[in-house]
Structure formats: structure tokens, C-alpha cells
Length: 467
Image (cartoon, rainbow, N blue to C red; front, side):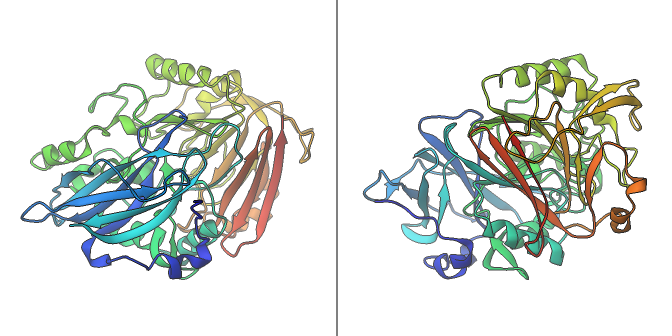
């Protein structure tokens, strides 16, 4: 039996079957989990949230793949209590969907006390010899019409996964903000440009933290902050850092609430802020670019170099983080500290560096950069641009291409500057700032194609890399 994943236009009709929304605080959604490497038998993590009951409740998850003749029971889900001041106590359940066929569609269902209360579909991580399609955007969850339209357009493309380049939820990454601005839109029951889409129940999101997700001292102001470490499940293979070090978070204030947060966030906090993973024939290195991270630190740079070196067998190498080193917008122009890592990316033959932070879309020429300072703001240096690179089957850029894809839904930055190329830096090739948009990338063997898609489905930029 082959399990078919329904298209987004059928979500509203297909996925309503067998669901009882009132049993959930947040309905089930898929995550990559702590599995950085490809495997012959793939897995994924399914999460959902419920109110904390007075007595334990029996939950179960079953899965069906093309190899299964009937529903297959999985190991019992585990739950973590989230007890944050001002928020109703709730449980975050995690169930591991195992024995998935690489690149294969599957169905899953969630049972409470033996009765089905939710059912949906998904697709396992692709193997190195399979084509991959992913969507990418940042700076998204502000509960705007643009965010909802982007969610709908992304779901229509039927991606294998979605990557978020930080600033996932505005404006402080709080539990309350996830409830209002993230889950209702990316896990909406009805798919439309006005509501969002039931995206994350079928498509895993993977994300880097931005400044609005994990800034210093936000636990002091908002004890329900740092929800990134409570509600996401991603690889834990980043550099070893401890809370309070100069290269990590510092939890300040409301010390009475801190133990409950730490317990609920284990083992993800703070290590999940940096990680790497393989998907298809690409290796991804994901960095926390917030200012508390000192990427001039020799130990951090050693981890980065080692991780990129481990990808020598990958066809494609991507790096993703929030703050772009190369940006022509007036807004956030001086936030250039990640430029200091450009020589490491070039030495490791990174193909594309993705970022957000700036709420528009920008594409650089393939470029090499030599820093001449290590400033925390504007980083002086010289660059070499490959302006011979063109969009075609034989295009082979000499250097990494830097993408800013921060138009995922928050208020747009510098829309007028799009028509003022004299204000752009010489490394900027494309600048689209008058529409919300996302990047859609398709990889097939040695061919990479990026299309920038607007909130109305229009293609506003496109380029191809071939190896």
C-alpha cells in the first residue's frame, strides 16, 4: 500500500476527519528531532500540547508507511511539564515516529484512551540520491496578513521541510506569543491566504534562533520567554556551552521560575541554538548569531570548522543564521558582525549562506570577503565579486552567495529602497523589499534552483547553480 500525502488544497477536507481539537492546547506538529545524520531507517518527532490533567492520561501514536500493511504502534510518548508564571500549566508530548522509509510518505494518528483524536500525513527525510524541495523565510510570526498569505503559499508548494532564519515569533519568543501568532497560523485547520495553512502537522519546520527568540535577559522581563527551547526538537550536536558563559544565554531575574524552565527545556537549553544536520545531498550548519555569541572565540570557530569539514562528501553546503553579514538595507545596516566568519565559509566551499533579520529579500553576487576588523557592528574589509556568474545550466559561482530572506510576515523594511539601486552596496545583485516573500529551493543532484515567491504567488527572483 502506498500512502499519499494530500495537497494543501485538500487539507481542510481531508484533515478534519478524526480530529477532536478541544483535547489539545496545541495540535500535533512534526519536527526533525535530534537526528543530524541520514539513516536507512528514518525517524521524526511528533509534538503536541495538552492541559496538565489531575490524573495521568493514556496517549498513543500509530504510523503507517508503504511497508506497513496496518497501523503500527510506536513507543509510548513522553511528556514534559511546562510551568511558567502567567501561563496555564501544560504538557508537551513527544512521540518518535520510527522505521520511516527515506523520502517516503506516511500517515500517523494520535490516540487518547484508545480513541483516535488526530490524524495527518508526513514525509520522511530524503536520502542523498533523492531530489529535495524546501521553503525558507525568516521574521515571520507577527499575526499579519502577510504571514498568513506566506504560510498558505508555502504550503501550496508541498515542500519537504521549511527552514526559518530566526525571529520566529514576535516580539519576545514567549509562550503566549506562540499561542497567538505561530500555532494558529502554521497549524490552521483551514488553508487560505486569510488564515494560514495546516502546514506543520505534515511538514517539519527547522529554525535558527533570532534576537526576538533568545535575547539576553528576556527571562527577567517575560518568565514565559525562550519558548524556542520548549517547543522545538532539533539536533543537539552544537558546541558545548553552558548558561552564563560569554558565548551563551544568561538567565537573569525571576530566579524562582528558572528551575521550572530549565527542567522543561532539558536537554535542549542552551545547546540547541547551534546545530547541524544533513538532508538529501546537502549539509546544513545552523548558527546562533545573537550578540552574546562571540564567534571570534577559538573554541567556537574550531567547532564550526570541524562541522564544515565533516561535510566534505556532501554535494551542497549551506550555512544559516539570523543576522546577515552582507545587507544593503538602511535598517540593520550596521549589524555586520557575522562577516567575520566569511573566510571560514569560503575555505569550506560553502555554496549559500542564508539569513533573515532584515525584513525583505536580498541576493548578493558570489563574493569573497577579507575582514580588516573584528568589530561588533560595522566590519571593514574588502570583497571580490564574481559578476561573471549567470543563471544557467553551466553556472558555477566562484564564491558563496549570500541570501537575506526575511520577508516571512513581519513589517517590511525599506520598501522605497528597492527602486534606489544607488543606495545598494556593490555586492548586492537583487533587492526586493515591497512584498512579503519566501525562498523556494529545489535540489536535484548537482542542480540548485532558488525561486523567490511573493505572498500572492508571484516569482520575484530566480537563479540556478549547477556543479
